[in-house]
Length: 73
Image (cartoon, rainbow, N blue to C red; front, side, top):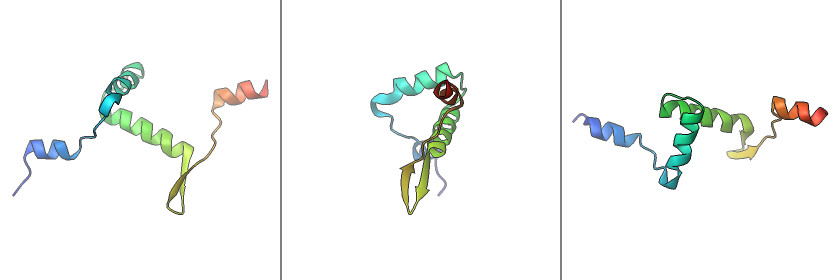
């Protein structure tokens, strides 16, 4: 039997708990159009700052362009 539209949507829902305001603030402040754009941004940011090795995520220090400039001065 095929899934109903409600079943398809609920399969992709993520519980935000009490973080919905923060999520909405990021979306609004960065002028993102959809929750998918927020998700992509956060996942890209996470994977840029972390590396998966031997099945574990470890922090990889990344120096932002602006912080490098202030670090040099």
